[in-house]
Length: 99
Length: 99
Image 1: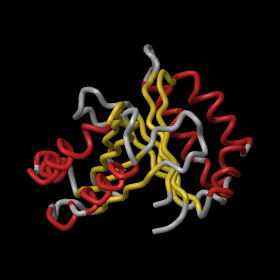
Image 2: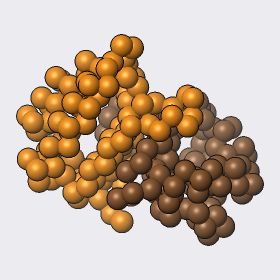
Image 3: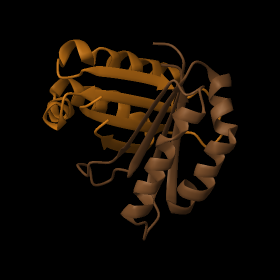
Image 4: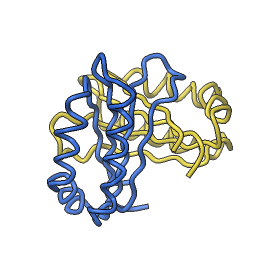
């Protein structure tokens, strides 16, 4: 495989509700339809097997770094991040690599 | 897609050499040949675009949680973790989800 992969692991802030988590997932899930640069988009909540795990994963695939930057700076993405993700994030870990 | 996905993001310990990083990647890359439960295996070093990023990603796909547990506890995997990964790890973040 080639391309550019953006991997984000989130730890929810204390007091975050499942309603907020579901809303975030729903809003993120709308992004591939409005940002054609997204080649693959996978979201999921941690299953709870590992006690030290973070809570939520976002894995986004792009053709290249430029396509990722379009996503990163896209107003629809920024809105989801600012309104639905940042307010419920305690920790955020990211790696970007070329698969 | 269905299954069970294991996502690990690593921050290298200070003083880790590229030789150690390459050795780890090579050893991890041998695991799919010896652990048939691994359905997909993707490794990569962070490209350096985001200053706060971790350094290395491991994304492993399995048919289900039981198949992941075979991998987790497999002696070949444990050996790579104990000998090549843990000694150069400062921080490790994980999420396991059903894609």
